[in-house]
Image (tube, rainbow, N blue to C red; front, side, top):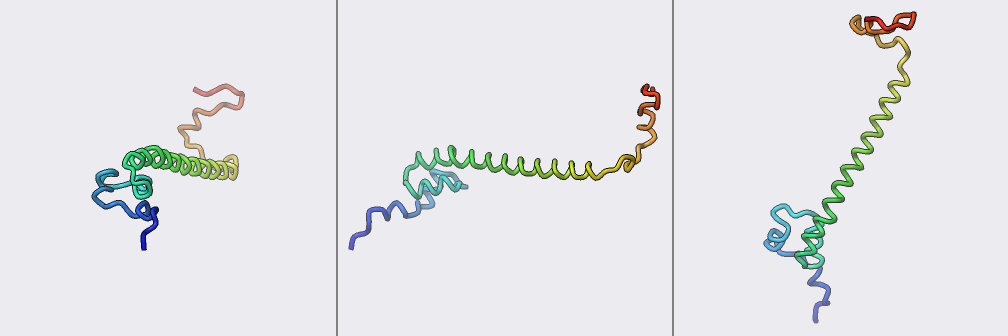
Length: 105
């Protein structure tokens, strides 16, 4: 019984070949493209053209979400503050405006 022609493509690349193409710490895309296609160029380019931009996109997405949550938290805290709830230190009190609208020196 002969093996189907697509089975060699599904076989994992040898560890030595994987190390020579993708380095000591192979990325997901490099490993999968090497296993799927067997092409060294596709594996190397795929990791650079797919893996790196996806990492950057994930970092930017997490930063955006953290930024939104922080802004929401700050707005919530500031909305709950009542005027006079925070004591102004005496040093800063001297810098405030007088009742007649002129700034103190």
